Image 1: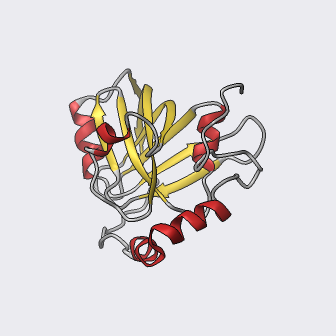
Image 2: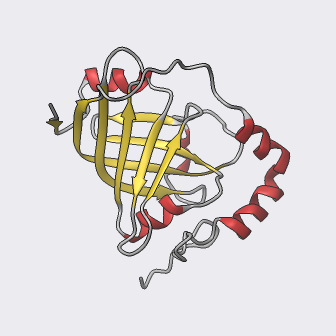
Length: 186
């Protein structure tokens, strides 16, 4: 049965820290819903009401644009071991980029990961647990290094060029403001 919480309890925080994979979901007012798997030790619990993750370079930048437009976000953790549990964090997301004033303070929580382009921070409005009895059992074998090697090979200039070509607009045409500041008259 589903159970709601107003914040992350110690038990829920322990569960999150045991997971190697999480999923993020965002959607614009009009357009495609974005659902993405994440890993590479990029997730951090900042307090019982706030979490954040390093957003590394990917083929798109949907989450950023959706959060700029409306802030709605869900993060889901799912156990693939004996304890059949699904945990969802509902809240308002914010994009934090290297040019933002609180970037240095947030980056203190994360390791250096090649290809990092921004941090996504979620202010939690509610937390839900539900059973995951239909989720299959899987065994964790380790992190893939492909994305890290790709980013290292690209280098700083190559990543900037990739962001310019591939991460400035979503597949629905929304601006991400990855490289340019958001207009103040939105």
